[in-house]
Amino acid sequence: MDYSSLLHMREELSLLGVMIVLLIYDIFKSENGKTVFQIVALLVVAAHTFANIVPRDAFEIAGGMYTYKPIHTVLKSILNIGTLIVFMQSYSFLEQPENRIKKGEFYFLTLATLLGMYVMISAGHFLLFFIGLEMASIPMATLVVFDKYSRKSSEAGIKYILSAVFASGISVYGLSFLYASTGTLYFDDLATIITGTPLEILAFVFFSAGLFFKIALVPFHLWTADVYEGAQTNITSYLSVVSKGAAVFVLFTLSVKVFAPLAGQWKPLYYVLAVASITLANLFALRQQNLKRFLAFSSISQAGYIMLAVISGTPLGMASLVYYVLVYLFSNLAAFGVVSVVEQHTGKLTIDDYNGLYRSNPRLSFVMMLSLFSLAGIPPFVGFFSKYFVFSAAAQQGLYVLVFIALLNTIVSLFYYLKVIKAMFLTENETPAASIRSSLPLRLSLIICTAGILIIGLLGTVFETIGSMSFGL
Amino acid sequence: MGESILTASQAYIPLEAYILVSLIMFFAGVYGFLVRRSVLLMLISVELMLNAADLNFAAINRYLYPEHSEGFFFALFTIAIAACETAVAIAIFINAYRNLQSVKVNSISTLKE
Image (cartoon, rainbow over all chains, first blue to last red; front, side, top):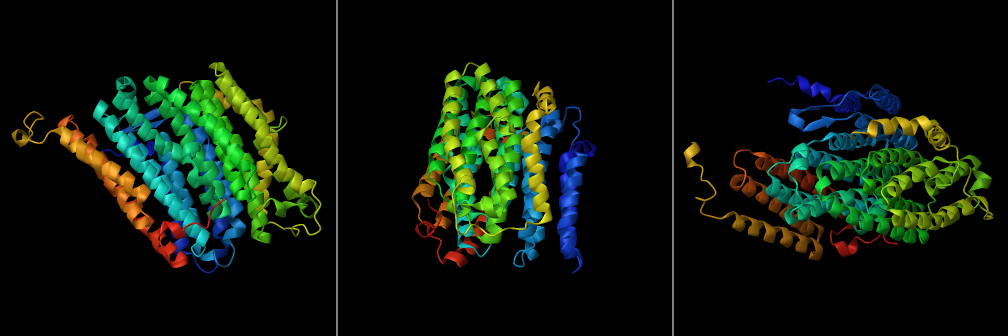
């Protein structure tokens, strides 16, 4: 048999290579090698990111089971950058004495989930898609319990794995009915066969529940805050950005390609989910004191905004979705970077602990302020542009009420984002958190995020490039 | 051995019976997941749901689309994935038991707003 067509899966093979190299290095490294392991890992992942950044021509292998579109490269590169930033932020956490022995595992498991997301993004068949989904969520559960001796992590791990398995159980059951109704599970074939019979609608609803769980939209969000709080902060940031970005993209392609004949059904469904996610998550975020829970609810409401792009179902929607994920990545990872470094050095995690942070840590406070402004969508920062594109994609389809509700909610969100900024800059505090000297990779990651927040919005070419590849989906 | 394969009309057990069994299994799983207070029993309930889907796939493949074997493969892969999930879940439970001294859901309630 000829396996040479598998060589086309360049991103996956390259990532697999990175994983194997790191695994072997981790197992056989000498006493000496332990100190440079993380540097090597960062360099290898960076090399992988750069090697796969140029889009290729579209193709498919294995009879359409694996498909490739140029936009996949864009999304995979975004996920790569996110992973790289998370790795940089985890550097000092993994150098702590109790974690030093687990360094290799952290990298391997994280890259394993990334590989799962790659497969999920490029899948052209529900079997491959399901395998990718599980490849992304099973190692994720082990990452959540990375801190083996913490009660909170154990609890978060139980909650995550049980809800993930429950969601995938419902998903697979839905797929079995889709198979009953159509007799195939290839995306391309399904698009022509699905007519919108009640069985297909049932199948779609069951199946999409699993994806909604991954994205953490409102009725499916109950695990989010607990898992985000219980998991180690760097893993939380990975979960909130990279894992979510991949799932949203897949939801879009599936809705537009495979379930296009059911658009009359999924549009109202997504509408309700988007409104519920944005509104309820905002209301819950208002009363959070723990910053990780706060960012959890903020990320749920951000997912609601991304749903606006999914509802539109147009190439503009696709472009704005990918752009939103990119922007959200920089903004959220900057916020999580600051939270993690403050937690690591002072153990403080509530909003009150951030009172007067500006006095002792002006630069960290500044980065945090930029990222929160960007998440809220204040004009000069990039978060404004991403929200603008998402809103215009929805408005183009005549969804003015939805856009209006989302706009009202940005005002609500401004309140809680500004609450943190007020604590850092305006509230007087006799004993602010001690001055922190963060590690070099973390500083570098914050610089990258800040640059992203400040510059990407002003570079029109970024959106144009993504937009030019979104046509034809 | 082509002639030994029964067609749908010759088959003794109708497809509906399989679907009914899988439906009962699935919703028993959902019920168990929501009602059981021990995480192990919850995991068993979820496995029941996944197995219901496997049964569906196999039966539908056999009765409706016997010319391909997509459904069988899907069931096979689902079984493998379910095994991975169980392995990881039980590892997490054992670790949790060491930390919390219990695997009852009532005692897993540190994380709350």
